Image (cartoon, rainbow over all chains, first blue to last red; front, top):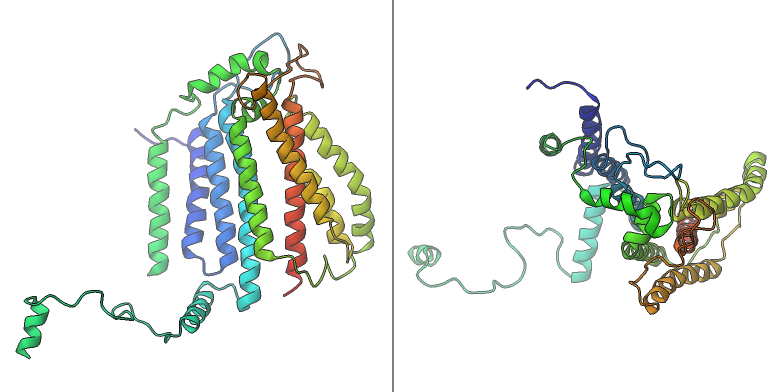
Length: 159
Length: 228
């Protein structure tokens, strides 16, 4: 089967491409506000995908224009879902932006690594521990002493 | 290296989704519920806009849940940003065009917003879209004039009234022996402005709630931004 460039392929590639671009932006970007914008792009792609799912060839919008005839209409259920999804998206974006405003007021930056470093420093200060923790040697006691007879214990005995 | 991994992830995800989507039958939706709704919706709900009858009639309780999500987002944003505003609105006076244009646009935006809300069961539009336009009408003065601020208590009143009247209409349907939020009072006037029973009332509640919530959110954002 040879891939032909037709309307169907273009629409699907647009919707899925928007989702991919948005998720790539979320993964790759260092700036928190750009992450939110990338999320908005991914959401637009998802909404377009939903509308495409209800598309029907040679059909009109699901609104009755004349009382007598009953023409073919596209599926109204995905459109209703997209209608609500857009409004929810706006609410979520406003919440995300308000959190970003607070972060910026607190740390003076929106760079992902700088914000993470500031947060680590604050957490370490509140907990009263040093900041340079490595993942190999966690703080505090080990939950269980090493069992006798394990290779670690035998190595200790040898040395 | 990290960038490469991210690009690979995004590209692979796009390829996977595309290969799944290529198996779909485009232009012939497999869902039967849409067909069924189309054939009975105008008689059952009296609304010519079938999307409206899906949003408010067949999936009314989902719309209620979605309104509560919007309310939760607005409440959380207000909680994060706090009540303390050292400055109100923009600091610089807007230009002549912005000030007088904003003042002149306010009645027009209100008219269009309410028009779209009231015709939600007849034409494309409805409470969500009209509510956003209402929010824009109230947000415009905040951009144009320094010191302008919205009455947050009033907004909360409108929001609470709209939300509770949405639930109240649903409860009235329950008291009448129908299902919760079941459309009632269906007149035999398909396509008229006064038709579709309780659906326009529900959409009016939705529009007022969305408008008040978004206006409150936007003014919160605008007033906190200049604080830093």
